[in-house]
Amino acid sequence: MSVKPPDYIANFDSATAMLRATASYLHGRDFPALGLSPLLKPFAARANLLPRPLRRQLYIFSGWNESLKPNKIDDVDAEEMARWAVSEYPDRSYPAMAIGSSSGAAVHLYAAMGIPWLPQTMLVPVRQAVDPDKPKDALAVGKGIGRRLLANNPDLQLHHMHDANQDRLMVRKMTYFRVKRRRLGEAYRRFIERCLPPGGTLFVMDCRSNWRTTRVGDRHVFQHGAIGGATEEEFHEGSPRVRALLDRVDAPVREWDEPEPDTTSPEAEWGYEPALDEDLAELAERRRYKVRRIVFDEADSLSPLVADLYRWWYRQRGIPGDRLLIESFVVMEPWWALRTGSVPFWMTFNMRPDLQAVHRYLDRSEPYEHIHLMLFNHGADAVGLPEPGEWRSILRRARTEGTFIGADPPEFPMDYAQFSRYHTEVQKLPGRYPMPQPLGFDELDAFLDQAGEYEGVQVTDGLREAA
Image (cartoon, rainbow, N blue to C red):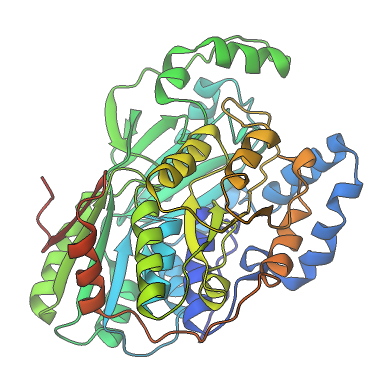
């Protein structure tokens, strides 16, 4: 039975949305409006009627409204978060489960196999005003409340992430506290033991993405920057692109004066913290679980593999596999991808590296007859943001038809009405196919044997680290 999510968990975060998308699929449901209340759909549909400055303020308010007041930081409870997470899933037996890093591509793997995923990382946004272009100030305001959060939650480590590029609208009103589980905890352990029989398989999702950070304290680091359009070096050292951005937004600086990085840590949103392995090893040995570790360099490294897996699986089932559905960040639809026989390809975000990743995939793939694209809109004129025409270059690669799904391209990246439209329009894709029985281990292994190696991805048996 689902329980009410804690007020301090962000709805707009990758882990929360991907958990809900996976759980919705296992309940036999689709994933409309990012899994949020249907009551928000009419408001989102009318968002584009507002002038752009007002739209920007509305977007900021939507995030601020979900944030936690600093004097409520003692409410954050790792076990409460875990109890909510497991309550989202049907309480039944599964042949396998996954735990660890977030990845939208992996959501489609879980849907195909009919298994749940437990996130290691979640986002707790804290309500406080900070100049996005002053990361040292951001670190200073996060120190005290960070110590309190960790004192109350010994199973967590804190990654305070400050991204003045693509998250610059949000960080001016809130502090991004991403917390990673170092221990399984009671709620996760009980769910696994109850729903994964002895001899079942535990997938450890191990994203090796990392970032240079500043050590704040025990189990506490500060990360300036994040995966997206700007490179890690640009956050740390500046660049002409960074100076141009700061000039466009009339910032008082032309480069970011950051705290000096002194360590390297798992990337705040996507990286896997290996301290969790100790509890997983104990549980696997005691319950005789098989363990398969899926190691991937970046969150989207799994996207080509999962897309090819779906195409192969469709053809095994007599489905054409010639329709590509490209998703962005939390704009995804695992149920409708399978219902329409669409091959899913997930992009981490909506930036130029994501655009390039799709082109690389298409360069090496058999052409698709139909290509459909859904974009996440974050409102920021950020370093590395493609122009609408660059996204159209992907659609032109379809042999028969290339379309946006629910998008008004000239409004990108402030096309907030798309959050209500994409779900309606994806249902209009032609073709309906029976929902499949879960993909079996034999089928998965047959595909992996035939497909060979994928760049940035390794699948190993056991908890040992991949070479």
